Image (tube, rainbow over all chains, first blue to last red; front, side, top):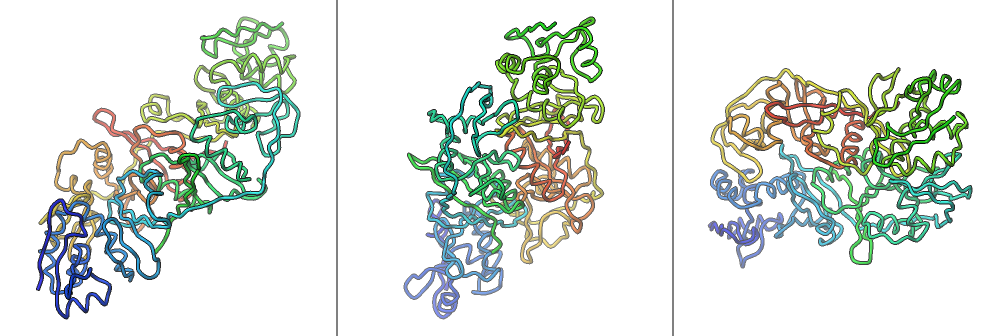
Length: 291
Length: 291
């Protein structure tokens, strides 16, 4: 009735437990397994989950000990189990679990010890969901989707009488520079990003590339330091609350990304991860999700 | 009446503007300058600040242009100016501003682009205050003080029938393991840190060193992933709210540390930075401060 085929070095979806006959039909109707003629092959995540429920005639300890030796199994299993126990019907893919109904997108299992790069996130189909398993076995879900922020502020005033400081630029001129810089009475000061943008100075800095793109989209861009991100961004005016926190992501630990998402959630702003990819700056909105 | 001595390569406190006579007495009484016989020498932070106020007979533009060429001046000046304008009396030291009255401790100026190491923080006298200037010229203050967390939970149960997973350890045993691991019905699972601690396994991991120390202090230690830190820590029981977020700090950008402080502030927990220094694990509490 059951055949185990656990082949080291083969991808997880090639491995599993074959179930045939009426039991196969019953499980297939609940979304388990992949078809193999009149039989189905259960992935190990499915098999352990079903064994744990005492169904499919599987011996829990046998299946569990078999499964645990598969690389990445425990992280995948915690995600699969958490979602199934919440009632989601999932199909098992090589690197994610596809939520058939409610979501129509993939849940990517991750361990909390991994690193996240912008390239990794955009290489996947968007939107998708990251499911991160922590040391306690709790799963945290993050929705990852493309974003195209737009604002209404397209000013680009000039700057006069510039004095270069080490970390910023000063001006003793009197001109109004709108949402750029800050007037301190006897002087004005500008961030380096503001200075580059207003004077059209070329910069290879990857953080400036995002600043420039945001400003060219009509957004007002100020320091996000208090929130632990590169920028806070206003859509129309600084009289309103900043809508976005924007972080230029190269590669950071999952822990640091989690921290940024938590901050944004706490202050009710949308966290955008950004990076210049080739000649284009791309944006991803990432947010905490309770499935 | 005034002598400028701006000597490139000399520390900031060796440089400044000499003021003598009655004006020196008046400024001295307000906490400005350091004594030099019957004269005082104003640091450039003091001089620019006073010139900006139109006092001390200083020409603002002249002093400002002179000062701006000193390395680190703009960051130091923004901190000095922010604190003075809030009414604090400060004496200028080589690497910090000592708050003479209200605080009795040093304010260390930092730029938001710097990196923070645990060693750097403990090398300074504690408590002290970090004053971080962001791209907009806003100053954020962080109180840095020593901490000695203590808890009341000293259990250390055994674990049976262990099965090693990739990221965690499973047990099919039935024993009660208290605040360690989690019972899922058919199995229990433990984090690697819990496993090492309960079995006395030696580990050179620097994050485990902090876990072990926290547990040996009677604290209950769980994953801090949702908050973007290594641990959340309970003093007595997990029925109560976690009192601490604990982060094992090697070296992170000021931005990442700011992010962690913001999270902790938002959830009303105390952020502890921790590290094993020699044979001892040290803790520093770091918190947002509005001066």
